[in-house]
Image (tube, rainbow, N blue to C red):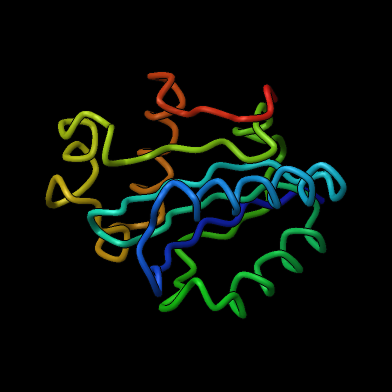
Amino acid sequence: MLVRLLYASRATGPIDEALVASILEKAHAYNAAHGLTGILCTSSEAGVFLQVLEGGRAAVNELYGHILRDPRHKDVTLLDYAEIGERRFATWRMGNVNLNRVNLGTILRFSESPVLDPFGMSGKAALALLEELMATAAIVSRDGS
């Protein structure tokens, strides 16, 4: 049974390149071992994370439990959780988007302001934003997956 989980959280400290690199390095290894895929979006300006995870129900739920306890996150908010027939983000063990580098018009299509506030978005709008970022090749991966 495949599921997709989408959540937002606020960073407890600054979101810088070192933090993102550390998260991605651990995510690539963990996700490869557990059959997970997804995308991590970060906005240092807004101090938020927006992440989608896809994979088996048990593996996704276990990882989300770790995220809820991760001291780098606060205000972890589930935006969407659904059983799925196929993955939308299967190409990435953990793709990455720095939302500070995304065209403001792209964010404004789905958000009330050009600074991303996923807490003010519906899960459907947040997922649509991620799909738009995928379609416009804004998502990068450090592991070639």
